[in-house]
Image (cartoon, rainbow, N blue to C red; front, top):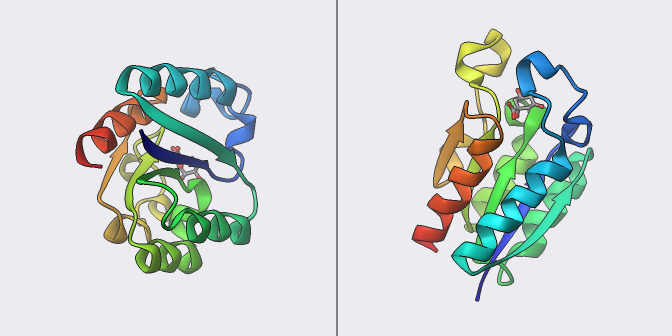
Length: 143
Ligand code: DQA
């Protein structure tokens, strides 16, 4: 069975109450349950983590090498700032799909640059919780 690591970045633990006009009312628990349902259909084993700490996310990516077939990553605010997460992805070379709930290219200028996109297999953004489900389906096809 293929294994996928889901990493939710900072503040995504607050989904449901966090800026619902942008991120919707779906909670992280709802998204994780939806992901588990999609994974079961695709016969994929999922491990799901959330961290507000950049170094922890770097650690998760490093640890995934040789243990996971793919990563589904919403780097959240670190998308726009983290050379460390970008370098970890480049170093570990695991098939990774970058996820965003919102369309980062239609938002503030500082969000319109992703340091992560150049080192991932692909990115899915702008579909709310469905970005995650579409991302997992895309990942399943290539791992
Ligand atoms: C986000 C977009 C980021 O700009 C923001 O910092 C987030 C969430 C998204 O899923 O739309 O925390 O990654």
